[in-house]
Amino acid sequence: MDFFLKNNVMPNGSMRVENLFHSFSEANGTVQVLNGVSLEAKPGEITSIAGPSGCGKSTLLYLMGLLDRPDSGKVFMGNSEVQNLEDDERTKARNHFIGFVFQFHFLIKELSAIENIRLPLLKQGKDEDSANQKANELLSELGLESKAQRPAYKLSGGEQQRVAIARALANSPKYLLADEPTGNLDSSNSEGVFELLDRMAKQTGLSVILVTHNEKLADLSHQKYWMEDGRIVI
Amino acid sequence: MFLSLAGIVFGVSFFVVTQAQTSGFEKFFIQTILGTNGALRISDRFQDTYGTVEQVDDDGDVRFLFHSREGSLYHEGIDQPSLIRDALDDYPELLGVSEIIEGSAVLDTGFRRKSIVLNGIRWEDHLQSSDLNNQIIQGTINNFSSDQMGVILGSRISQRLGLKIDDRVSLVGGTGNLHLRVSAIFESGVSQIDKNRIYIHLTTARSFLGSAYGGSVFQIALNEPEHAPGLAVQLQSALNHRVVSWQERERVWLDVFKALRFSSAITVSCILLLSGLGMFNVFAILVIEKTRDIAILRSIGFSRMDISAIFLWQGTIVLVAGITIGFLFAALGTYLISMIPLRIRGIFSTDSFVVNWDLNHYLWASCIAFLFVAVATWIPARRAARIEPAKIIRETL
Image 1: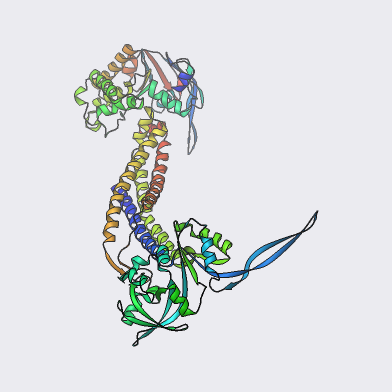
Image 2: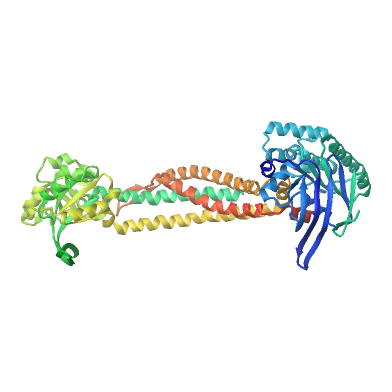
């Protein structure tokens, strides 16, 4: 956040990656996961990244979400190059501009639905009342107002994933990075989640980057990339 | 976590209670010896040997003369007490000065005899530099002051010789026999004094010992007894008499008390150390159990410092609760222990546990608990802060 304030720019517009390379060190040697990936996710659209398991989709998503650092290449949020930001800057950027949705929802199970949604808001410095108000709006938007006080572990799979989406949207991010958000849901719930993301993208100008195995959902996206062996092939 | 809390509670309270006891006895001992023998004692005069150093200067030879205390010759007693007394008036730190002439003699009741150490005192002066008035357990100081041939006996002497107030007793030795009347009986609590010392008037003692002018010692009470060693050095240099502070005089016992205090502090600190280790284990396991949640929090914008703060806060809550409850137990324990009957005679006299209510004990207990809990919490908190969210999320999927 400080980086954006200091440079008098706010991330507005596409999220782009240019020529990203990334590798992991393992016991058997180095594994090259990304081999020069470039793509762009535009505001108000769902950009899907599909491909076989192990092709580097999730790794690409974590690099775009500033959870990890590439070996080389660039990540842009709007016109700002962000891959080399300091750890604190990356943390603030995640809190203010990026929302994550994971396959296994990753809610804090001891907390209620509304408490999970409030977390990023409180971290951002919002007071309890405004955090509650925003969380309730999101719960209502996602049809979960009656489940607000229910502990996360008592919600169904579909409900948990919707709460995770609500948490990702709580800070009104510019970019929503979803890693197999429908991977654990049945087809009806999967379509519901996709429709929700699509609606949010259109309503708020959000860039949604969706990593999925589901070719049907990928086909419904505004833009679709296919990855194999760490490369974009389509 | 409850066990860690309990460890801190008991560690803090045991620390305070043991320190209250050991320092209580030490403080009581110091009060006793200050009240009996004063903070400073000026005794024998010494005669310096002199040394010279020659240094050749441009203008000719220059000689330096210096005092050397090595190999000084000591002369028993104080030669000119009135001069010393006048010199002592220049020291405002002195609360009271008592000139005492000491000697040995035998008390004879006609049936029994006992060797004693007689102390000739001016009673008004001696009350200023001792706690004699409060140590009198039978008779009064007025009985003594109004009778030039009065004697104040140590309690063990009166028991040994079967003497009561107003009984007659002979003092044998010195220049002859003195017939004294028992005016009062004192108990200092120091058995060596109670079974050997008697007080008589200074003039009577001088006459008995045949020492018309000299005094044996000056006993001095100070406003701030802690400053006695520094003042002793000053006075020794100024008066050319041996000056001994109570700290030097009672070094053996003070060292024993110090060793006891340290020993108990170390022993009890082990309880706090163990609770710290327990807390470390709890937090270390918690970090492992919550690795995924930590990764989630990091992904939604919680910084490394935020993650550390979660664990540090938990540690702080346990620490504050432990110290607070520990203080309550400590105060209660100290009070209850002070009620326990315990008869001690020897280096002081008491019939119950002596405790010292000192805020420093609470402060030290808090500091030690803080140190162990801080380390026990900080290491896991640091480990939690170092968790890389991408790695954990990738491994969880």
